[in-house]
Length: 491
Picture (tube, rainbow, N blue to C red):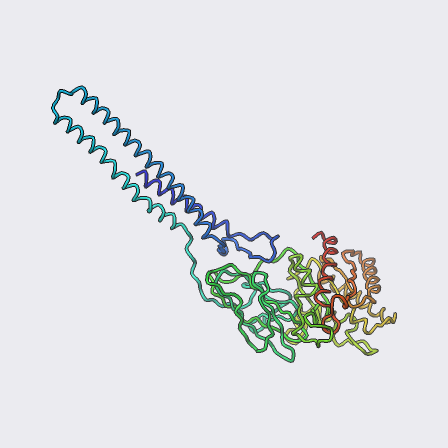
């Protein structure tokens, strides 16, 4: 009876320990740990990291405790039996001494009686020994049972993924147009495939894939539809999968047609981050030619990489969700030109309010759905190809820049705005500073400032295609902007 009670206690303790470990494991990780797995609350999904190890450790501890308890009980019972036997033996010897005159037959009878008593204690040890494996098997059964895996396919809708940047749904696929736009989701399973589509034209789209924040590979989309295996494992694991468009909106779009997983609980969007930043810029912010060997390599989307820009580096440093709205050659009053006339065929103010600045979508972006804490504007480099130090032209640029500030503020009423320039020339920075000061004076809005990047040092840091900033230069841009933002916003 005592052994059965011990076994029940062992089972109860093990079950309680396993349950505690299970629910403790279903929490979101520390937000200070960058690029790791987000664990979903138990009420939604069970994402169970290392639960088996925890349960086994608990079971071993309980089993050892049970064995010590049982050993103590066994020792106690044997000791009691031996004490009783010795007591009976002493009583028998006293009786024998007092009755030495009795017959030899009586002594033999007493001796047989003592032998029988001692022999009867031996089976007790054997019975107890046979119950020990029962306790071990019971504790082992407290280990968690592996959930079943299912092959599942999902559309890239908000229910299942977190959109990165400005994206939209078209014909069942999520369209990625802007630099660094993409999708991100979490799941627990053994395999993940993503099917992408592309409106392949002269320039192909470049896309990168990340697993748990680590770069896995990137590819140029050569066909109208391709499927990529991003994760495979023999055992189920917790994963965050990210698909990010590296090339800019000017050349091609990418569609996330479907996400296919072998999973225990399907896929879910990753949580929103604490900070949101929007970057507005031109080819510099696009990562134009950043992967080129030097300034003489011709630009192509194969050497364009938005993830190596100052914008992405700053966003990742602050563990922020970030949008990139950029287009190579674009300006505020005039885009890039070698003419004496302004190039106004495409400008940032008209496209800023759109979801995607191309033929696939004329929808206006819903600013209320994603409000940034900070907006960084890096425009004016291409305007300078027209203003060329002529004050009358600079005045026209300044007026247009003032109106653009008002447009950005109207769309993002609570954001701090940084108006920057400089890495490829800062001749229009005085005009930008003038317009920022005038705007603050006229409106009383002082949540806006200016910032100057250092001019690129191509001799020591190299160039990207067409003398654009190299990866080293982009890192230096981020290194200068990060402390400025930290001081400005307390991040």
